[in-house]
Length: 463
Image 1 (cartoon, rainbow, N blue to C red):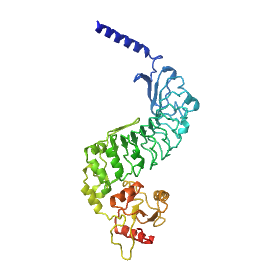
Image 2 (image 1 turned 60 degrees about the horizontal axis):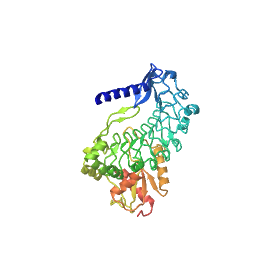
Image 3 (image 1 turned 135 degrees about the vertical axis):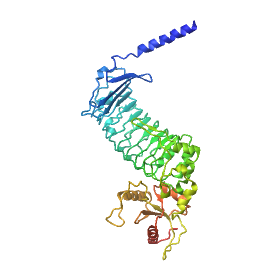
């Protein structure tokens, strides 16, 4: 008897649940109407953005609405201004309208979308956050704007979105992000900045997003790992692939090695300089936990693409290690590569050329070759020591950081002379990396003679 009652009770439940979810009107022929985690969803996928769905054919109780044309057509059915067609869905929680040339959300349209939690406008022509009226859409928890035309993120752009957990802005033209851009986004856990033009991030940029767990900086123009990453205690996955990163600071290795949260670090396709400064990183890569984090990186799946998993980072220099992945290196090899180079550090013991008598300070190169062979900025031919724009920018930052810096530029590089007391080699190398430079490595006799002459011209003891 109990079994019969249970079965009947189950049937009653099914009947009641089924009666509650009938679509009225029926689903449009161009869409799929179903349920996602118990919520009514209409997904309309078609060939061209010229196609317009008759919204009166979509159930007004729909919670999730996805307009997903596969390509741009001759005209855009829902652009350039997002039309006020969605006010008839008072319960709408998610709206996706991709590939429609959308440039803005008018105030009237935004006012009818105030319940939105998820907004996806990927593949459109949005140039500025201000055109989206996010101050009206302040309940959004997930904002996807990949593949638009954004070129910066200002300090107030995201301020209204206090509940934001997910931000995707990959595939834009972003070259600048304000240091305060993420302030107040205390719930942000997923940040995708892949495929932009970022060269640096302010050290304090991650200070106020303590929950960040996923960070994608892949395929930008970083020459060093952003220092602010060190402060992300809950960071589990970080992608730094396909930048111009030459080394990994020892302090960051220590933090990652001791972090219980870190799961995967993507660093492949960077021009790594495999010398003794990289030894702590290599040691970690050769442990089981380090190998798992660095060399068994899972495939990256985003809203727009799925990419293959990545392997161990690979050396590009010195030439004897070109193409070697870091897990195959030995500390002896790294030490040998360093021993074959002449390195000046504080009060280094070197025999100076005849007639030279002075103390040596820390020497740091400003434009140490940090890029692959297909990226080679040339020195301006208008003068023997004329600087490239890249070098000028670096020197300007250096002057701001340390106004008393002594800088000389030679045939091959520019050198920063700093009086900071005696340091052993590894400490000196870390100091250089901490301010975005590299400890000098002298490659030939011409370079060494230039450095001695620069030191002589300083005309005062450096210790």
